[in-house]
Image 1: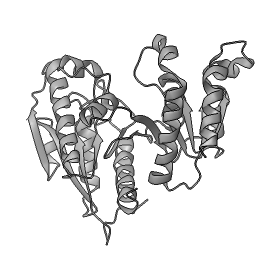
Image 2: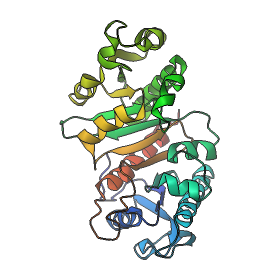
Image 3: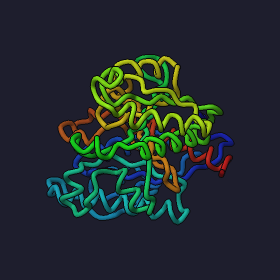
Length: 321
């Protein structure tokens, strides 16, 4: 990863949204602005005035004004407006990528943005039908790197069996394989498919998804040259990945992947949206409304999100294909 000295390094332009103005977003974005004061990081902070973040940011693009004690709907509307502005900057080529501060999904809905979360909103704004949610940590409590793809994202658990299909699994694996080659420079990425059922169904005792969905998907992917293994039970696959056996794990639904990822890498992980026409990263945590304004927010994940965004932008510029 490039150093932060700024010496003879190419400049990368990033738009950084404040997120929900009631949360820790403004605090951690202010920490980012203070940390990356080098020519290598050309940062445009996007969000409402009134949070204090604008006082730390040389290039601040105001999208409204926040007054402490404002309503949930106002907070959501301002957070959504910042996302819209950042995407517009990226699509027009005014910035190379975006880093988004944490939002409150309930507030986003109250503010008139009817999306399950950032991932789905970004896909809609960029007019991309399918994107991939990747959680990445290059260092974890288990020692090695851990990268987890969520095959299905922000949907009720009851809807997962209907939404998790062979086509979804194959698409997620192909996008992940391409992203690891292009963004991480891995010539032969090794993917693992996390099983859907306990013990990978033990030969059909606990469900048929492993045979009905995974088996044909594996055959198709392997025939296409994707190095993929599985299905591997959830109680071992993430540990094996963190120990270096796999470069990424594709989890069938949100919580099985996120629980493992945050246990191993909370505070150092980065959310990356694959499949967009621009780079997008985000910290691995939420708004933390309970500690906002107390000076307790840890900016570590946001700092990592900015560093990784820069790395991914530079690799895109070096290898446009």
